[in-house]
Length: 485
Ligand code: DUC
Ligand code: ZN
Ligand code: ZN
Ligand code: ZN
Image (cartoon, rainbow, N blue to C red; front, top):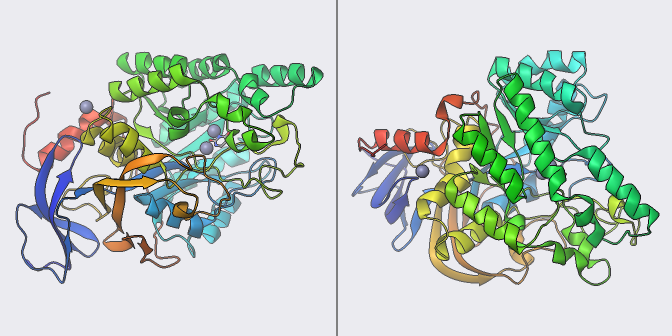
């Protein structure tokens, strides 16, 4: 067989195995994985390198207006370029409904933003902020288009849909095999804390963290899980930031609840002390749920190792530290009026590799699962997330020994700061491929605006519970190997 591209002499990583192999690629698809593959119109030398499935970024805010009207600094071009430089082949940003808007209008808007601009394959999670009867009627058409997940909020007055709204959506999702994602924080607790701090004149950025206590997340996660169980629907808890919340997820999964969850690098790398930097510097570290403490970081790593989380996602929410973003309401705005979120789409995988794999906290197989395979499985990308024949050639070639100090310039996004600036990283992606196209190679962008494709996703596969084990079996089965149960 003749191949368009052959990646040779690399070390291939799957969730369950690491082995030397060559990869043959034709028509954007992995056509062969074998010990030696000769020929190839293009031969890519991966000697001394790790060859892994390209990252799948399952949580990022691209070309999205927040409910208070702040536009993300990254559009589908800069967002996808930054993701690619960070080792991702595919991403799934949000298409966000504002109240009163029809879903058809939302999807058309995001198609217009994404299709002409994305250098990577993409899909959307639909954010629903207004589950009116007319909107609920539109949802089956959205699933039919291959948008099989959406996010709802339990916090923010302009987003929170209430328990009954969540039950309506969970019920429809269950009928169609869609996955409901939830931002879980108790809105009333946060608002009550905000009023108390405002009355006492405590409005600097550091009070943001205190205003959104761990209990607000833990209570909401417990409630969200209870609502999902009431109607027997699958649920995905986004950006878990507390040990208590993670413990609820772990317990429920062990009991067989159809539950998935993620955490994010910022909760592993930073603490609420970063909000107390001089002047208004702390505003750069305002995100929700907020940064916690060192004990939480350690606890979240333990949960990562224990399999509590399917994925580690960036929650890239890029608001510049100027009047277009963080300081939209003035340079001295009180913390409730500062945009929530921080950038990190390019740092998710280097950080996870460096602090996880290079420091011995997780295995290479864990890295592949957390960065790619599980997101593909959970979000219905049935031809992505693993290096197996028949799958898309979405591949990242990593130099596990490369050392870098993080700089803003290396992010390739439209931001004016990086919360990871100055960190020392071991391991970096050198070449990123999407559907057989080289997107990034040796620090250079090789793909063009609009080269990425919209990917229609499959329904959520709750038969894959608890997730990564099923993926291991599937990958092993394709290679004709056995894994002990
Ligand atoms: N939730 C997110 O998922 N991202 C940014 C801000 C928020 O509240
Ligand atoms: Zn959120
Ligand atoms: Zn987010
Ligand atoms: Zn496992």
